[in-house]
Amino acid sequence: MVKPEKNIPGKARARKMSEGKSSYRNPLLTVDIIIEVSRGVLLIERKNPPPGYALPGGFVDYEESLEAAARREAREETSLQVDLLEQFYTYSDPRRDPRHHTVTAVYLARVSSGKPQARDDARGLGIFREDNLPAEIAFDHRRILEDYFKYRKTGKRPQIASQSNVKAQRSKVKS
Image (tube, rainbow, N blue to C red):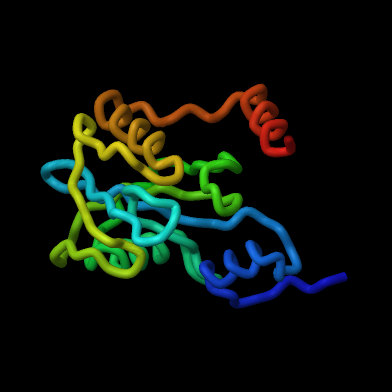
């Protein structure tokens, strides 16, 4: 039996898995943060592939809570300290990230301090509303944003995928 590797930070673990050097295959855990500002939500313009705009976020490190990871990723990519308001939803479609299978916990947050500045994996920043989202949005973040705007209008969160949708997703991933 191969022992699982321990204490490998999220990005390094993802790299090892994508290179086939890891002793296990599990979905990678990530967080994404919808940072609410007065004129909309803050998105980063990605510096690395896949291209486009995205929610600030990234991999959860070993021995790090989801909440700590969300605060860290917001700070690393936007220079902002944020207060997490609530966990919005968890997205787990195996195709949501073209690089590997990831599961993300999405948080709603507001700025507690700092001035927005693109850092780390971000080339730039932008504030967007539902009616002016950028054309190119990475991952499944357009769907997440659509769910978020619907939630803000109606108070209804996304619905859990039906069993038939889950089976259809599995068959697409296998083929």
